[in-house]
Length: 381
Ligand code: GLA
Image 1 (cartoon, rainbow, N blue to C red):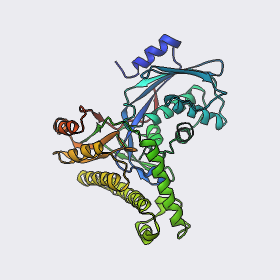
Image 2 (cartoon, helix red, strand yellow):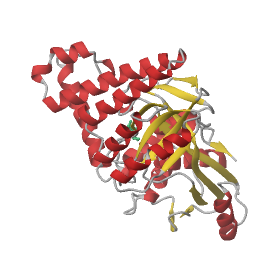
Image 3 (cartoon, rainbow, N blue to C red):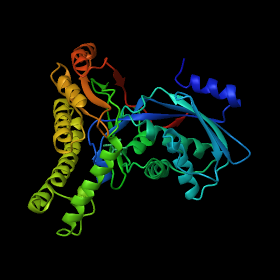
Image 4 (cartoon, protein in one colour):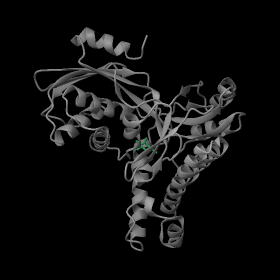
């Protein structure tokens, strides 16, 4: 059975033959966390888990959305879009809203989606959903939009209908990734460089299974703290527009005037950008130990200076780095729960899974570990 089969079966039962079927992947991020909305660098990859989406056009302007795994359904009119009190439809409604605001004429459609991407685990099921729908409608109605445009409007959908002021990493990773490559993305000019990743290491995610209750408020708050830092530094250096433009020297020179929390946040972001650049160099020279050390440093920064970790993430990351064959481990994504990402030497996979059991016991959870491989971006099936 293929991962899209339940979606196809449900679609056929309800509506008949779909006109477009897409696969839209989740993502991992090797390093570069909370740097995207500061216009810095990130190193994500789409993964071999995602959302399958089947659609068929209608002759009127009504939409029918069916979330198979949630067993929820919503119908409405394209002329009357507004954020919904439930969460799941907003990723989709936000995309419809953005497409229409961009002047695209959409007809009605029926949609069923589902997949094998853990929801709320920090693997970007939200971007997979947004990008999947944007991509599918682009195909269904021949809109002729390129992937970059689809990524930008998916991000805008999340800002407006979901209310999270996310950066663009997840949407770019979901739409633009290439199989067996990591994507070094410059979030300022949105240029990507693809770095081959078929080295003898495996990516494992350890899921804390901690609901990310604080993720949204904490996320927007961090965003605001970074902006506060930039606003203050601009008084002295008007040429800067984001933390991407700020050096450690400039930040340090004004330490006395900056709120200590804002200072810590800014320092983390500037250092994390430097780590992404160093990590890419390490990857290119096949120095995976150096790459792993940078991941470990990233976790320390996220936990101590940026303060977006949680006790469960800290326990899992700390336990992993002590295991043989683990090159690096850190929390991944927005934080406050979700997964750690672990780089494990090939041949040590089983030892890693067994070795993590006591750490899961310590956080009172049964082990939940996902192996992931870098895959291609959103595609038509
Ligand atoms: C979430 C956001 C991304 C990014 C990460 C943290 O996944 O959607 O834009 O900011 O958190 O790196």
